[in-house]
Length: 291
Image (cartoon, rainbow, N blue to C red; front, top):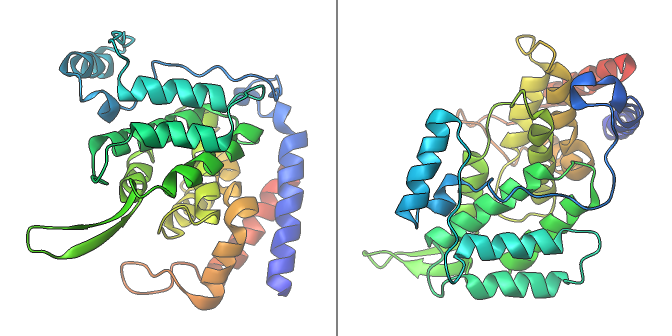
């Protein structure tokens, strides 16, 4: 309990100092975020959300090769991704009249029946992450998005038993969402460092709410990235702030892994040890004192 108490105290100090010293991290910009409207870029579609339209997919590949902007052709009626984009863009604003129940219902109605592995569900997961990365990590809309993910996740359309050709039954609990979470784990973009922080804030929220079966490996990876001696440079602070996102949201889950070793690594050893816990605690303290 003493370790847990010290950890909570250190993390509270860290988050407080990060926020008050935020303007000094010059590559983040010198203007604080406003809790007002968020502009979501409609061109930021995950590639797999475009695969249903060969023309759009070809343009997306062209963007990757040439850095040209993708021009999304309008279709009548709008496709799945465009409809979901409009729902999310409305729901996540502070002045929306759309409730979580109605937003989730609208999205679920767009999903196919009896096919929890349909490409649209993978596309939906990609859109959730694309939106999350555009939301400042401390903005209230981040929590709203997580609550929407949970609401959609209660539908049988994404949580369903199915059988393979050998009549073996499987239970799919947002499996494609978990796969997309791994696919979206990218290296830090030096032009948009806060997107990296927002990604980890989103994942920490999802893990805290048990949105689907997933281990704490994402938090461990980020802790190691932030505090490994090889991870240096001007964006070291970004990695530390990204690691800190797991503390207010998933800190209790991490601490449980220390006590009960629920998660194991590839060698069947505890994913998080007491030594790791104390090392992270010391490194967070060092960082907080420097901010």
